[in-house]
Image (cartoon, rainbow, N blue to C red):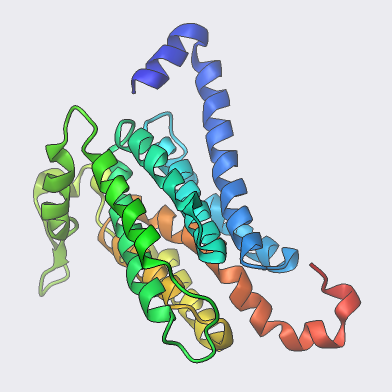
Length: 273
C-alpha cells in the first residue's frame, strides 16, 4: 500500500495504471516462460493463454496485484530448479521477503512449496522418471522462505493465517444455503465459491483433469499436487480462483502437446516449436 501511495503521490493514477499494466504483463510473461521451460510448444501455449483473461477480476489497484506476479515468479524459479537442480532456488528468499511485506497473500508460498516437496519427492519413484530432486537444496530454500516470512512488522500473521486456513470458505446446508458468517458472505474479498456463482471454474477444473488424464505419459506428481492445491483453494473462495487459472497456463501446455503428438508426427511442418 505504501508503494502504491508513493507512486500515486508522484504521478497520480496514471503512474498506478502503468505499474498495474507492467505487473499484469510480467505475470503472463513468467507463466509463458514456465511453459516454455517445460518444453511446451507455442501452439499449445496459445491455446491456454486466454485463461489469463479470467484473472482480470484481480487486476486492481491494490497490493494483491503484487501477489499475481510473485506467484508466477515462484513458479519460474521452482521450474528452473526442477530442470537444473542448482542453487538458483535461493532466489525464493528475496522474493519471499518482498512478498510478505507487500501482501498477506504471501502465505501462498507455503502451499506452493508443500506441493513441490510432496510431488518432487514422489516423482522420483515414477517409472521412467529421469533426474532427481535435490532435497537438501529444496529444504534449505524452504527454510529461508519461512525465515523471510517472519521478517515483517507482523510476524504472527503468517502463523495465524496458517492455523485458520481451514476455516476459510463455508459449507452448504441441507437446503443449499451457505453456512458462513454474515460478514464474510457479503464481503466481496471473501466471496464463497459455489457452482451457481462460478460455474466456469468447475467446468475448467473438469477439463483440466481430463487433459491431464489423456496426456498421462507426461504426468508429474508436482503438477498434480500444485493444480490440486490451487483447485481446492479456488473451491473455498472466489478470490483464489485466478491462481488455478495461472497454474493451468504454466502446466497444461505440455499435456496438450502430448495429446497432439499424433498430429505433430504426421504434420511436422505445421506443428513446430
